[in-house]
Amino acid sequence: MDATEPLPANTAFTLRPFQNADADAVARVVTASVRGLWTYRSDDFRQSAEPRRRLVAVLGNAVVATAHLLPFGPSTPDALRLDLAGDGAAFTPLYLALLGDLPAAVRAGEYTRLLGVTREDFPETMHFFHAAGFRNAWQSWGAHLDLRAFDAAAFQPLEKRLFLNGYEVERLRPDAPEADWDDLHVLHVIGRDDVPRTPATTPDALTRDELRATVLRGEAVFVTRWRGRIVASTRLSVREHAVESEDTVTHPAHRGRGVATTVKAHALGWARAEGRSRAGTGGAVLNVPMLRVNARLGYRVEPMWVTWERQL
Image (cartoon, rainbow, N blue to C red; front, side, top):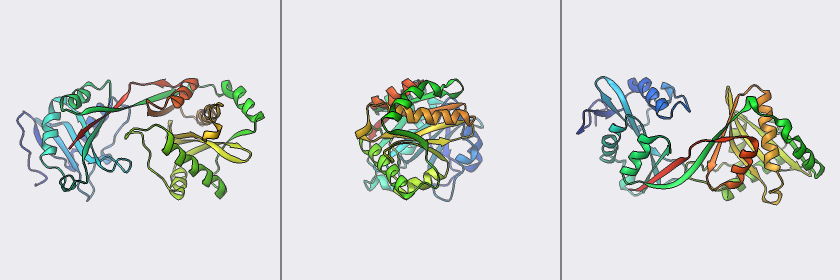
């Protein structure tokens, strides 16, 4: 199909494949669709040489909606992700156009289902997935913390009690010894294996070297030691004005003592001192222990994120 050839539609919208000239408009549409929770740039949408399945809906001369079909990710290799943004009236024709030209991998059986992720207070996408026969399969939560009002000193009594029992909190140095990277990777594997996840909250399975490379590219990691070995950790992605929790894990032998609360409080105190004003986190609704930790730390839970599923 030629990149400039409009796709047929039974509405006033003109549907056609995305072109690089649409990047600015698509960035605005997608940013508006998530209510400014994230800000997208035109460079996030410019096409590389690798073909991707993104369509746009045009009304008059303006791009008013977009749909994107892409592999969901390594954690869910049999699923394609359907992303929709913009005018909800264009979602059905965009969806039907994508279904009419599914990748050959679907026909070969490599992909067997579609997944879509939206927040419960985004009515245009919630209504579409329900009406299109998707199943409300998983729920996850997001939460944020105003670091300007965060008081790390409130958690020092707990940290002192743990210290008397042999627990010490510190930031992991980039030049940490190999044994520390071994321990950090053990916790990463434990977190992947026993923390409740959804397709939208499952992190990539990283090797030890991949984990270290990820950390060194822009994360701050705080750890709790017990008798010299790392038994808990929290990883923060550091941005200009904010931090985002990537992974908070306590070894099963040391849970139920407040270890996760103290290591995360220590990390948030560092972020505040470094001038960050906001912290974000999230996870599956079934991860009750982490919900409790974040409640103690003062996070405010946002509306749920819903992952919808439909078999192909």
